[in-house]
Length: 233
Image (tube, rainbow, N blue to C red; front, side, top):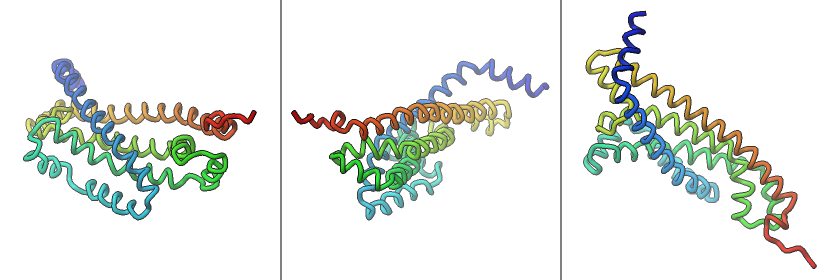
């Protein structure tokens, strides 16, 4: 009971700093994730068209995942200095593999008969990608994005080592001072952030899937309208 009271007293005393470091943690996670999606999604689509390139790209992204986080941050310091920049770049690199791999797997898993049917309706390659393949692959792609998000929330705690802020400030400060309240003040919000982000993305996935399947159905039911093919007079 005393430990619990002491913990909440610490939270109350450090509420301002805790809030600012939580916002910094969110910023590091979201910026790196958005950049990773912008790069990894097109890369996943590209390698789905070139199977020979897939092994090379996935192998490179996989190799990045094997590099310890601290080592990767340390390598970047001579080039980018300390602060948010190397932290964002490291998180960006760690987020690439799940998104590239799931985008590639999702598009590869689309039934070839569905793609052939779309071609039979006169859809272009671009239309097939955006109206058929990506909507059908969306659940798999979102699973990769959700995995990358949870990874980034966890790895972002290490950003404190290079003065990039985040909840790691409390965790590593608590370890240095042997202060369990300080450790928990950083660890609990970080865990909650991972849960909240994953939940919000699951809601987005659920809503987007409904819209995607409706658009697919409309594309097949009304090809003339969606493909800009004029009706014969």
